[in-house]
Length: 534
Image (cartoon, rainbow, N blue to C red; front, side):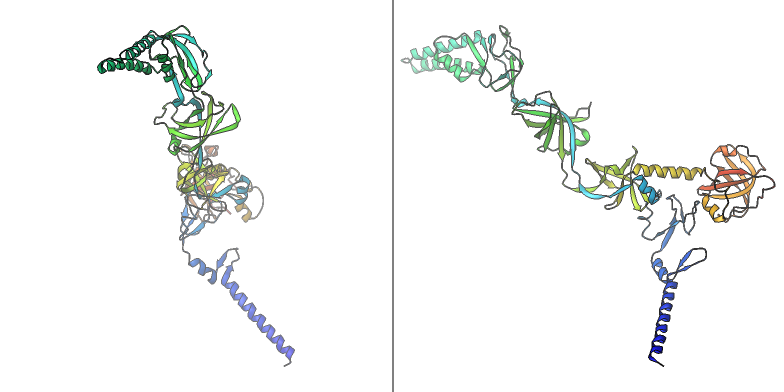
């Protein structure tokens, strides 16, 4: 045998072995039947046998399961649920299924639930008020008369020690004379006994203390004691720099002890009293920084600190006053102005959060749509916690890392409700393809549900039901029988009589509940009660 012949034989042998191995491997992967169904063989079966199928669930998310494979009224295969996947794959009994192209059209966006610190800003309305610690009143402690006014207008700025008004008081004149007489007595009794000198000094000190108790300054007392003549009037001065916020003194008026004549307020620092809502007050802390904006100065913002949270709540507005102290060196902030206050709240711990747009709040419960897989969404009832500006804490119902719908979730909810309504009432478009020609396969896929022909045995208009003796139904593998059907609406009963032959379409709305969605009377010659759906 020549070398070329030997090489040819070897090539044929190798090719044959390769083809045999390929054929054996292909046979081990799958066996394809004539009807198009595939059966997994040894290698593929080994993978599926490792995962036990628990049951089969409805592909549209309806609360319907089956222990064996089957199809729904629309001809869709029930989906197997494997051991260990019943929670993650099935989700709830109300799983929503939407095609991927419709998901794109709806503009659905998803985002993972994540652990984050909830930092938020509490916003509140406030008002500018004077610092109560920088407000002073001028109220003489003796009776007298206003002789002359130096500051005669409310709102007038004054400096510390600036004269406000002159007063005349008989009590003041009497006190000056007593002190003058006592001082002269001390000088005249220098050569007398010690007891007499001590008594005269006590009388002089008593007169001097009386003047001090009337809040007369030391400079004025010194001027009164050094003068031998009694002064008729006394000038009262401002104890602090500020603005005259109240003036009751009128020239020539008589005033009584303790009567307020002037009020002077130092506006170098002011308070902002912000009304914080009840649900936010637990996050406000003393010492935190605050930002204040005033409508009069839209291009400016003022910073201050929270100095006090008031212990009472206003029942009318359900708010708690919070005090923010601001520096006001240029006098821009005026008492009575309205303010917008922002109080930042920083959280030091991380919690499970989702965007606020992910929550569908019905008022009685909160729902979040979780994307189980592409085109399948699980509506979860959740328990919510604290909120920030754009995120919200989830206490129960969602796990970290799960994808939640953050956009178009209301559209998905509406879509699922619409499908449930259509599935319950049936398709109004049935029969559109029945008038057209085509194969049995094309007719089957054109209808949602099943078709049959039969004869009316009884009509119950109150319950909206028909008792029909119908022929076999091949799509359900039913034999000919007599059974009761309900109609989708009572208008379908119009013109029907017992004994009438008809062709009808029906769907299964619930377990064992069959609903007729379309009815077409047939002539007696064409009627065949034993002719089922083809």
